[in-house]
Image (cartoon, rainbow over all chains, first blue to last red; front, side, top):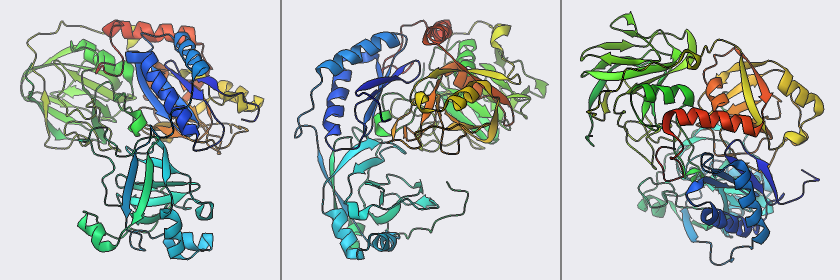
Length: 244
Length: 324
């Protein structure tokens, strides 16, 4: 990716263009990506099928029966030529996710403490001390990739993913943090659990967290966690080798 | 058309996987929700067409056979896609044509002879529980299908259909559309993404080698085995993945991503299979060989437009259209 001139457009099938704006993950990327997404909504109107924002890119999927790839490309070039970053204050919603940090809800707290050379309490303090931004949703409905983590907490994924990560699990891997909206397999380090429902098909917008939002994890005790509907069931240990 | 739906079929037995699929779920991928929809768009579209349904009606996708259905009433149906030794009252059932069932008829899907996924459309369409604008059943996301919860068909289920007063014309698909999925497939691939970062040798191999369909194949993606492809980029910052993307993880063995793929991913990609090439791949049995053919946008777009015009003209589409 070294000699790439940015921004650039890459073909993504018959009905898509990948708009690459950046080559590094930075919080400011979100302002440009939000502006780009907004412009695409306006400019493409109902010929727009899907927009998939991520850390450095926006995948634009259009209706190939009403717009040729060439026309779509012209639109995107025009948008890029006049693009200005979104207003930093205007685009983000703030969320607080109450989080029960405990070895029962976060069986990897100890591992993270050992890898970082911090105490378990210091890990919890470091994780809950800052706002994270939602850079992308993916992996599963409502699964928000958040960053950036305190560099002291950066640690690799598990060698063997768990077959079953309980819904609400708060996790970290690399520079990122996330909370699992539903029980799925998963290879991130589990450090706590939130009782907040993250994906709800009956909610307007479906996903509590949207790209660009700010998220703060707020430590709560077990009683508060349970009072808010949290499930205290213990986490199963990493599963057999078939999980990847 | 009755909104509550009418009894259509009872499920007497299930096989490995039978799912309700409409055209798919669109306008929601920024939420991490995948596309869903028929793995073989071509056969699914023909099934609906032969049953007299408009583009986008929900039909059954039956993978590998094993399903037994009993008709609750007289129904007009069509069967397309894989030859799964399908019988009606123990007699071979005609495929790629309009069929009339009588109440009490037993439709049984046996084992695959040609292809992997059969489609059953019923006149009026099956009635699913639309979630986020679509009834497409995605098991992993627990979304869509008959119950809205992404549950595959189970023994004892009653399948409801929309009533229709129209009796569809008796139709048959042209022989040229009744594909022989056992033949080696040539898959059109539109170059894109990180293709420039693959080595020359790997690009030669990608488009000249025979690729074997691996056992690890499902509605998320199909793994292919062959020469090891090398890319100077080994991992990317995760980015959106569109249908048919061919990604190459560090083991050098490509994975073609289909309807239930994750919405973002971080492996370098060669480009995308066209929708019809992805459909074709979805019918390949493990062990079959396929080739990639570098395709130009003009020809493949023309081909895809012709395919769609057959069923719905070009007036549909956009994120608000259920018929996309």
